[in-house]
Length: 374
Image (cartoon, helix red, strand yellow):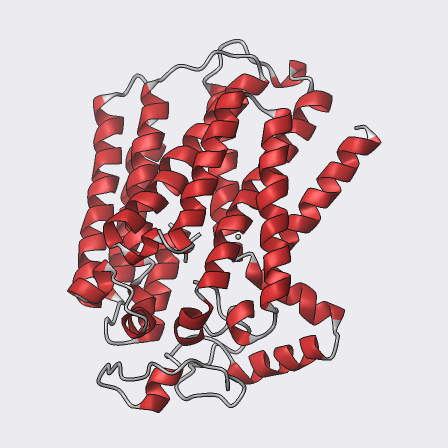
């Protein structure tokens, strides 16, 4: 690997640390419910004349699954100049659970593309050339992910102080100025990497996702304000563009022609449907803040309970579609993962749904996190 390439990778990795689509973080260590306003959030916005049928104290800090005392100490440590606290804030800023989804989709797409290529041999893969390129591609994806989630935290700071006060910009662990540096770094380096190392079609796909992710949060378009546009945006980026783009990139890297196959078509359908569900359920924990800031979502329109039930049914149908695809096309699919694997995941989903209490915010957040885990 040349020094120039190593330097580029290092810069990209640092930028990835700074920044990440759409979503809920795991709780810090204590997992105590946050039920009252904390003195550490004095800058929390006032909803003015908006009434949600709750007291001002309840509205000021929506119940969540984090430790306000630990968060307050973290903010103080950042202000005191602690490098460790700042790095922890940067890590939180990247929304780690969305990174996991991007990495898993990339690995799965890569394996699928390699397996689908006749005559491809791992022993003759020229790893000294292709492995650095694969790492570069993964970094570019993470930077795009970072840019989208970072820009969302900047423009949603007021809403997040109600819905997700544990996020670094909302909590004060990270200044808005530093968040902009992180977002702009990710938003510039990511496209430059793709433009330099990958074919024009992949750059166009990357920029399509980059643009859709940006207008999701940035006024005046701000597609997140329309539940249909928001759903289409997330389904397109996390469903089709990510999975198709990775598959196409791998085929291009090994010099194999791209062609649609039953397996590629299934992955595109299944993941687009799953991302559509994510797009709808992501708003379940954010109902109070969305109402206060007049953000219209399916959850605020229909209610948490109905959306949770509808999402569960939708995902069960998606799993049924996967099982049926495996049974009806045995020559192209392995029955064990297609039937047994998806049936097990469907059973897990049903079990999690039976544990959901639509009146409890911690329960709603846990249910949404489990959808991501699936």
